[in-house]
Image (cartoon, rainbow, N blue to C red):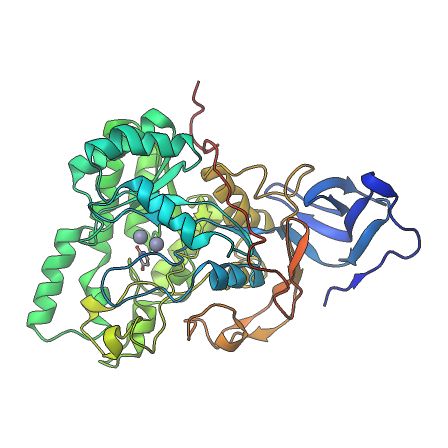
Length: 485
Ligand code: DUC
Ligand code: ZN
Ligand code: ZN
């Protein structure tokens, strides 16, 4: 446990004193690891160095690694849903859970329903978040209805107001765009310097496979993975790359699940195209077998899209994290309970896989899983961990250097790591979901302390933050994109 203690003698001296000093930290950034004290004033990092003057409060971090607070750039909270499904986490429980797992910035999605104005979707989403967040938050947009008004007016106006990234879907009936619509939306990203995120799966192939599986009576959760084989992700990834090439705009392919999609991205990079990529814990730690090896319903817990693949693909994802193929590592937290009528059993019933809401919880476990199995497991460096979980997501979505690094002037969003053995149980988590797919895993570390703008929001035992502390962050131009004049 990290101890909070008063300073050993002197008190801070007046307005220029440090409000908090973290002593003897082993600070890790995306480029370096170095021992130093961290001096915090007014929620920002004010000084870095050895032997800093006394602060009003002090934390002794001797022997501990300190990383930037995580930036989870792909999570779903309180997103309006069609039908009986309802997300279990709102901004209160979702950001509380984030804080307890070391994440200090979340970027969920203001989703446009077809027929709805994009501006109205943003306004509604602000109302859902207002006064509830325990950590800072920004919004991506989801563009599902690119009308002439959305393309010419709403989207450019929103980008100018700090919503500088949006997601487009190539599947899901209520969200998907056709190729022409994709081109129109990508062109807006190019003209206005926004980051376009793409969910790449071929909708028609999925519908065709689903119909055949259902006709054969194959409706149990495990068949979800058969309805969305790697081929449908590979084809859509290739098509998304081609569309972005035609428009001449960078894209970021989200939740990449395995080798065939990666091959497309490597090919694109070899052509000199700017294609960024994201992956998520489910593609490192789950396989299609977690959706079931028989017709039992338990596997509904692990239904997400794209589905988890196999051990071989997990290795390919690990390699992509280590060698720079992946830009960001996000949770794709999509919180549905297993029991109850709004989650994985719509209306309280066991249903055919096509009716099971897609997604798994992961906001709180994202950082500990990657730190434990990636860094302490010897698969990625500490620098790569920081880059993937904090620095690059902040850069990709226009929040750097305020977020995502440890530097003078940056927000004092920090994680002090506690390297100790633990067995993960859902009861220790702070989300509103009744399961974690990772229950029973042996981990080697957990955040011992999380600070959001200098406030301790997780003390290693309990959530110590408060709803309403988190602020909305308007995003700047993504710094991974070419600079606009
Ligand atoms: N897939 C998505 O595209 N979004 C939420 C969850 C999921 O599994
Ligand atoms: Zn998606
Ligand atoms: Zn998602």
